[in-house]
Amino acid sequence: METRIQIENVEPKAYEGMFALENYLKESGLSETHKELIKLRASQINGCTFCIDMHAKQALENGEEQRRLFLLSSWRDIALFSEEEKIILQMTEEITMIHSKGLIDKTYQGAIEVFGSKYFSHIVMAIATINAWNRIAISTRKPI
Figure 1 (cartoon, helix red, strand yellow):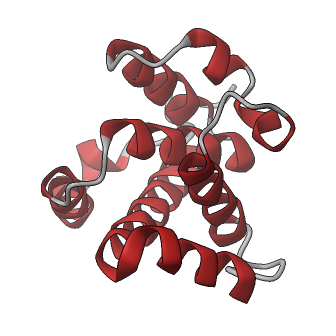
Figure 2 (tube, rainbow, N blue to C red):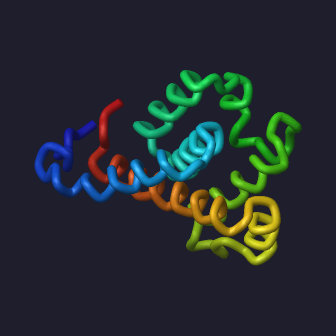
């Protein structure tokens, strides 16, 4: 595979905004489990090898069960995920695949009812942030 430039080495200031988003998410109150499920599922959808590797490791370090990670792409069909997590995973898929229908009204309304406006906003920002990271890592073929 062809080696590509790594933006953090060529233009380190370009990463400052991304790290500001990460710092916001650290302070947001979004649970570590929710953050890692979002990051891993979006990265799976986008096919970002670097981010899948990083976030699977991080989830395990945070105490996530291997079985849930192995079955994450089948979250709809199994009872390993809570109703809250299923809403977050549905949001992650719809927002990541914005070109399809985007965040549909039913998912939006369900999320607002369960999480309220503030936590909902944290979830959306986490999804947007990992999607940006995925695009950077895929475009530069960031090595694992």
